[in-house]
Image: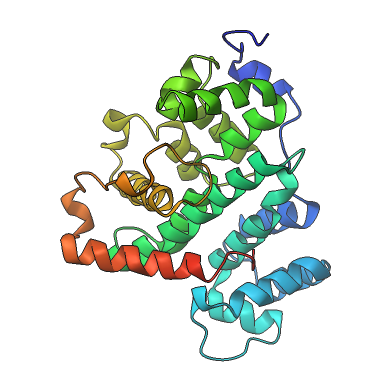
Length: 282
């Protein structure tokens, strides 16, 4: 039997073996913390990992980034994409390494995170309410706490997902019946450990607290973008999803997004096209 509540607090979590990114990804994040870091330094570091180099070149040449020419080397890729996009690609292509196992449940989690990242990037480009690369990394990591809970407490996490699917219970409610700490707060601790900026930690920690988020306009806009991205992923059927499928609607979108019905339809079609092209590049 699984205990009805998994006892978990910040001190306990910090003492656990939290997931780490591969060494190259950690070093890239460390270099990117220096605002004066050179493209040459980033290129030399990434070049030491042939697999990562190949993936970045593959993604740089993918339809998602809309390159009009064949990107043949890392220098071209970095110049075309920009340092923040390269950082995000390094993290995205390293994400599978944070899982302790990679079965069906883990595959669905990975697809959910990557799908949200891609959709958030597209929405941010269209609405211009936040930087597309901030939206990408926010979408990629906003549910990273689920990965930790699934890694460390697979039976308890499975119980949460069983409640979600079988009883049509919202994830946050099902989670609160099993875990004493939300996956958002778990994720906030993880991204702080990984060395991401404080804004990303705050995004995760207060993602579900509208009163706090409303006071921080930029974070509020990011949350709005990511929530719309999640709804689109759910409607399309990308990764873990709540019951509903085609019945999912996008709710009352805030005026800040500037989307009317036609604009929303066009945006959703763009996300569908990207997903139809596959996410294998990552």
